[in-house]
Length: 209
Image (cartoon, rainbow, N blue to C red; front, top):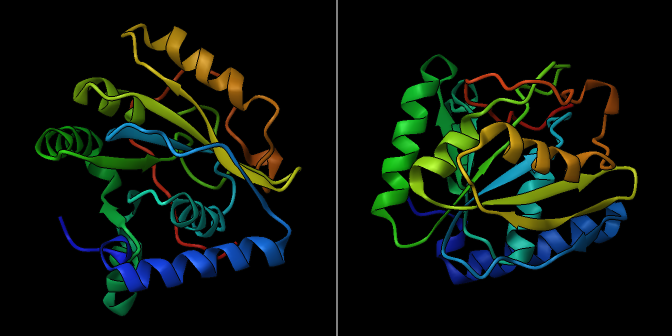
């Protein structure tokens, strides 16, 4: 896998201090602890703004999590693509969602340690469902799902419970969604409703909104 900011001690240390400064200046607080397990899928929710990417990167640096974050492939052009890859972003083509799931499972199986960040709601625009890619990746790779969150109402970002996948998707996802019930995104009106899942993968977008 390509080297990222997390692979160089000096860069990682500098960027962690920068992330802490960004959180302090913007009034955000950090909650929770880094999971002491080598491999897992972490949900990034609710996803209602492109700025979620910035805060997600900050949290990964603050917690010391070497994360890989799925993003729309259309943002990976020229120097921007190089920079996003250095931050740990992975370009994903929406049209090949099932291939993305299979590819992610294979990558998990090849790695001794891996953290994959997947936002379950489709886009920053209003959507009516959660997408199930995160669940199929976790189940196929035999790894748990960790509940990461950004609560804009309280200005708290952090890590919640670790959920072990049972194979009963509706029940598992309902339990996960219950955790996110009181958590508000930047634009609450655009968050996904707690309705049946769509089977395609979900992506983070470039910061801008």
